[in-house]
Length: 328
Image 1 (tube, rainbow, N blue to C red):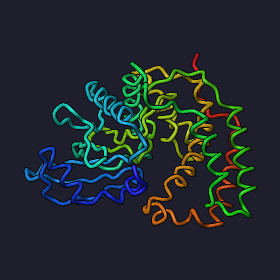
Image 2 (image 1 turned 90 degrees about the vertical axis):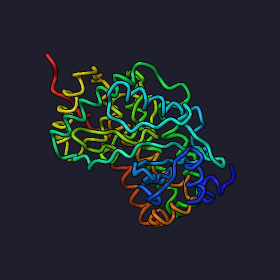
Image 3 (image 1 turned 180 degrees about the vertical axis):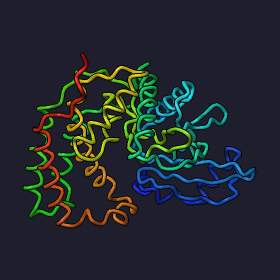
């Protein structure tokens, strides 16, 4: 793929319309862009007033085999009655191609935003996460990677060292903070968990509410510890997070046993996400959408602030991890 293809500069509305028409879908409503930076996602209505979402995958991110594993996981969940947005098949194929792009078509599921402060909704989500992991534990991804320190810490650290987006006058202090954070994570990281297929990016924005939760966007699905799909739902101070975690785990365990040794991975996983997110922005900087939507990445104040965030997370990692009420 060329750089232009990588940054979606060759993906025009006519290209999208032609790709859909080739699958027998006539777009009648125009294309409404949905919030997605990694891929290009559009909602539309066909001539029969059926609503769909089409997702064009960013070239060179996932291989065809890796995307198909995402689709297979979604279909496995759907068969097990786990509410998830799963791709539609055309001539028995869910992964489609057009002019070098991979894409997939989904039904438009709709729904309102999951309310993270609604404890009743939180309990429902915990219950359905148990069911999601019950399905996820039946087998592992073979082409998609595992969540681990190499991809989330070591490789980003190498990128930080070479990027020109970090001001030279601030780079030494920033890299020092990254190194301290990596050391703190490595002290806490362990592998005393069972790998299973995860949603991978299970935050409130990827859950819709329609008489119960609906999970969307499995683009970051990976193998990893179950707690990865729980910790991003926690918010507030430690007492509030503990109460939320108690509720989620109690509901979760109606369907799937939760390994409590994974609680010690919550803050390491948070640190890994912080580092990985920043590296992701740098890697995507050649895509015109990123300088437009993240202009603060070029600010010196941003890099000073990021250095402070990493050092604060080092302190958090040195505190006792979040714990549940002991079972007797």
